[in-house]
Amino acid sequence: MKTAEAIREMIFFFGNDKKRIAHALKVYAYALTIGELENQDGKPPEALVYAAILHDIGIKIAEEKYGSCSFKQQETEGPPEAEKILSRLGIERAVIDRVVFLIAHHHSPATSEDTDFRILLEADYLVNLEEGNIPLSQRDGILDNHFRTASGKNILASIFR
Image (cartoon, rainbow, N blue to C red; front, side):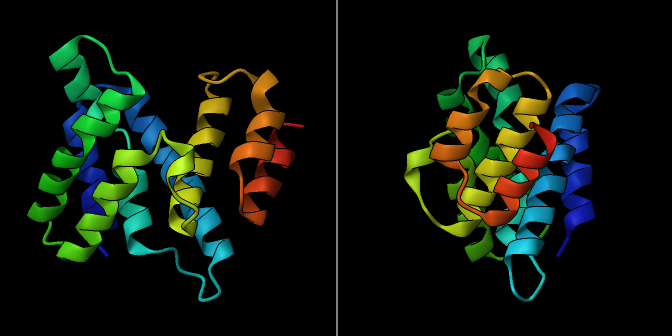
């Protein structure tokens, strides 16, 4: 895996936007943790790792294009940029395709029950709760409606009691 290279590319892409870089790194850390805990071989899927790093890459493009960054705009603008980055890194096509799918739907919880999708969603919810992007009053609803993995549920319950 070319994790460090993907992180470097994400950092260069966001430039001095420390908030976006920190958000991506936190989502990556949670996704890696939940992914390792949920997979019997101890390794998260490669596509999950890259998707966690690049999941919000569309924000910058949406802000430049539209002056805002709605969830839909992020899901639309992120996949082409992630595909460019991963192609430059020489990532295999099947992995890129899965990353593109994950990024294109990461704000649409009803899209999939696949474990990698759920883990990315859970990791992003954890960080958004911590950063105040989602009110803590929504914690129970998020837990009941969106969290599927035992590890994600335990982390959420532990951090946000």
